[in-house]
Image 1 (cartoon, rainbow, N blue to C red):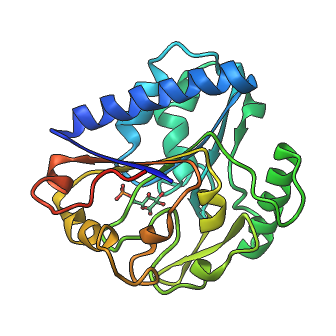
Image 2 (tube, helix red, strand yellow):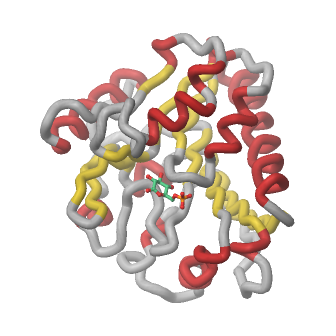
Amino acid sequence: MNKKVEVLPDQAALVARALELILSKINVAIEQRGMFTIALAGGSTPKPLYEAIASSNLPWDKIHVFWGDERYVPADHPDSNEGMARRAWLDKVEIPASNIHPMPTTEGDPAISAAKHEQQLQEFFHCSPGEFPALDVILLGMGDDAHTASLFPHTEALKVSDRLITVGNKDGNPRITFTYPFINAARCVIFVVAGANKKPALAQVFAPEADSSTYPSRLIQPQGELWWLLDAAAGSGSDLKKDEG
Ligand SMILES: O=C1O[C@H](COP(=O)(O)O)[C@@H](O)[C@H](O)[C@H]1O
């Protein structure tokens, strides 16, 4: 793993740096493999980043978009991660509909939806059950409880290591989420974290010893690059262990 930590002065600088990094990964992936695959985060932090990506002139037909987690609601629900990304980015650009790969959420049973998406991913990446394909970029946020994607503290999803997709649990409400080994198979994982409320969780995620079940973002140790992009409110003044690898 090659880990880099950057603390940016404010949210605008955070968005600009994340955009720069993603654009460079798009160029490399398309040059080397002819397409770029990215999984998006939900929540509030990435919205301005998605708006910035939408303003970029990109080869949309070569870009495939997935989600790292989803709330178990239809895409037109205000809580939907897919809905947020569509409004901020995907509805504004000429990306083919077949390049957008949302997590299914309308089957009435989250376990069925998770299994369906697992199969969709296996078909897209031409992989067998038990294989973990590598996305070019997985974008992640982190909650103030140190959850990432929908891998919440002390939930069953944290124990799932034989699948790409599982059912998450946020205070009794189901979510659909990438499993941690699937995230760890990525070529590049980028955390984008903003706000002073994330500071205590970050200190535990970066501590030499702490419990991964209590602080699930600790499980994210990808084979490829790991970037932690923090705004000053989240990252300044902390004794964060910086770059490794
Ligand atoms: O519920 C979620 O929260 C996390 C963190 O969101 P943020 O608004 O605090 O950045 C997010 O990464 C995840 O995708 C989302 O479903």
